[in-house]
Length: 103
Image 1 (cartoon, helix red, strand yellow):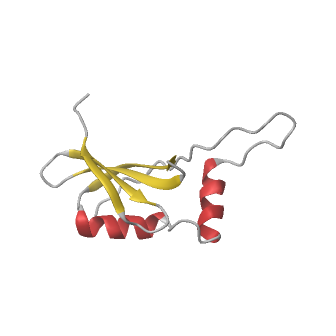
Image 2 (image 1 turned 90 degrees about the vertical axis):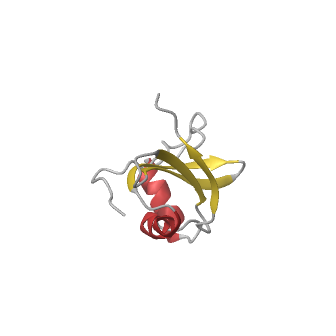
C-alpha cells in the first residue's frame, strides 16, 4: 500500500479542566496508548487494512467513537474511489467502510 509521507494522526480528547496541566500533544497521547497496549500501532493497522482494502492512504485520524478508539483511514482505491475505513484501534477490526463524496 502506498503511503503519503505526511500521514495526519490526530486524537480528539477532552480539554483540560482549569488549573490542570496542559494536555499532551496528540502524538504523545497516541504513543502512550500504543506503549500501554491499549491500541495497535498505526503501521500494524495499515498492514491489516491493505489486505482488505488496498489503495493509497491519504489521511489517518485517531478518534473516540462511542467510547472506543477508532482509526479513521481515508484512502484512494486502485479504481480511483475515495473511501473511509473505520477500524477498531485496539483490535484492527474493520467497523465501517463508506465512500466519500466528491465535496
